[in-house]
Image 1 (spheres, helix red, strand yellow):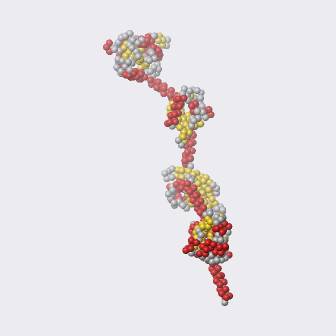
Image 2 (cartoon, one colour):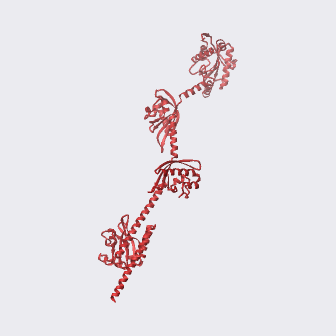
Image 3 (spheres, one colour):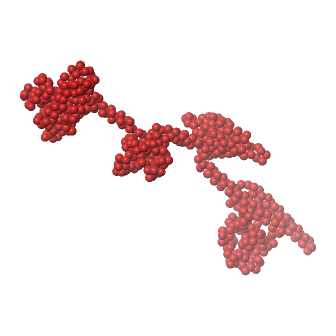
Length: 625
């Protein structure tokens, strides 16, 4: 009878062992399936615990993870929640702590699995009686502890607990160790996937931030990735329907850029055919007609069997650079061919560059002026104060324009017109540049034109316009100073018509020139002589009285015979005068009165002079006819 009972008991144990192994194999199968799914770490650990408790029949299971100085309980499950407070939440990793003798800490430190068949006895033997009592209260009889590895480093311990002593047979131990391997492998995969996702996020962020356009295309040319710059280049910034489409398909949904898509297709094909990195220049024309020039680099990627896999395209907008280069080339051409002299200096006004026209105008060769102060351009007559004032204006206003006296390399003086400007970078003066031209001939022409406008071409005396301006000045002076007095005289040559008729007009012109020189010598430096035309002259006598000897001196100079072309010609003149004041302060009236006095002189025989006086028949004394 006893033998039968023993046989039944052995059969029961075998069935239980087989059932346990069967459940555990099922749990392991489920765990393998779970490992192949894409789960977060938290979900994976939680579902792993449920599989081991629900399918493998453990009383409790959980993960302890390293936090530096302790192992802390993470995801776990206990079938008897009423006594969960008796389960330790942390184990100290201090070698002096009693926890260092626990199975959990020993398994972590050794990096090897550890199985305890009788927790109460083992912990009593280790002097951990309180912990033995706690485990007994929650039916923790045996435990299996397996290290958890991540990246080859022990990061924690996986603990499985049974309410039966000697539960962990060699078969179950192997299965639990395999489970720990699956857990470690899956956590490594989760880390790898997390790192991949993070790397991809970094890559997407990096590519998105690039000012260059970036594309990734599959073997058929379909867009798999395009950064913001690439999308905006093709007017796709606000669209998402570009993904997975080839250039031909994009040309249909993005007709405004159809020609650009077709151009990309052509250069993509060339890159695949070359089988190597290919550079191309492509034009992308927007709907408004503006064109962007893109310098692209295309990198084909092939599988091991040589079949196309991916095409990486990087495009850089060269429009501005090309425009800048064109402008730079144009500026350089203008600099080199400009008829104006150009010089550039540093912040201390030392010359660092000149153009060919600079040398043409100044005579200075580049090697003779580079590194020297621009002051060398100034004429020796320009003093330091004038130069300092000019540069103070440039500093305060940013520029200066005007005439300047200059000196060539030979020492010859000339007049230059200068435009000088400051060069600044971030508000700081880095140098100056000047543009100038030689205006000496222009100045001479201007002065000649002005001189001709106010002078008689035959005698080079001031003309009627110049005389009238001077007369107005004298009248204005009398208005300011009533004590000031002047006389206006009008003089004619006597018998000048006969000279022209007898000796010819060239002789008459020579006589007029001779008389002009005589008159100039007879007058004072304060007097003003002008030729009105023909044989008529006008004189302003400054600060005179009616008895001033200057009038008789003029008449004596006129009475000296002249030798013209071998002919001695008698000469005399008639002079009509008006004294101001008391005469009215009106230029036309003064001239009219002087003409009236001249008329009276001629009427009384010429060769004399007289003042205008209304009370004496138009003449005043003395009147030496």
